[in-house]
Length: 230
Image 1: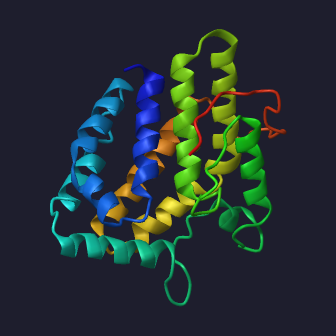
Image 2: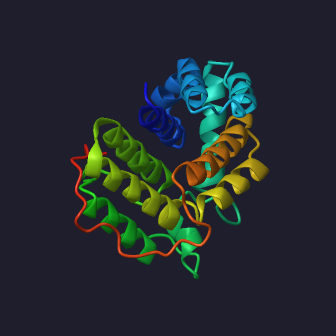
């Protein structure tokens, strides 16, 4: 495993953990083999400071009975879908990046255009909006995976696409989203997942060399990579 593959694996895992935990998803999360793989990937990146978050997640998913799955599903709904008087932590970038706090607005269209310009095609039966955290993390997973197979100018282009997407569409809202999750979660798994996600995004900011005040521009209209549809 090289560093790009390690990053891809971590992005893939985080993306999956923000999917609604039906019985199939919960079973995959409760089978803690993925924690070992993420730990190995982080150690390859010389990042052992994440161990405390992974240990906490291991403890949170120690039960595999039906009541645990139902509890996680209820908490997912409360945090991300439907809570009174408002959704606690909307998992959509547009909610945080639009002044009106709206979902499915200008930012959503910009994210979708970025996917297309990078050669990324969403499935026709996509269940959620393109700026959902699951899809944005999945996009980074696939870019990092492509980078691991690339060399020369193509590798440089893929690194630039990752830096631009992280700068423009992830860093401005995901840390705030993670803070909301960690602060308001009543279910330990999501609390620790929020902390882990925030720390990894901060690691990625440094790893990709994102400037403190990035100069955004239209993203890589000529950069194409043969990404597999989500």
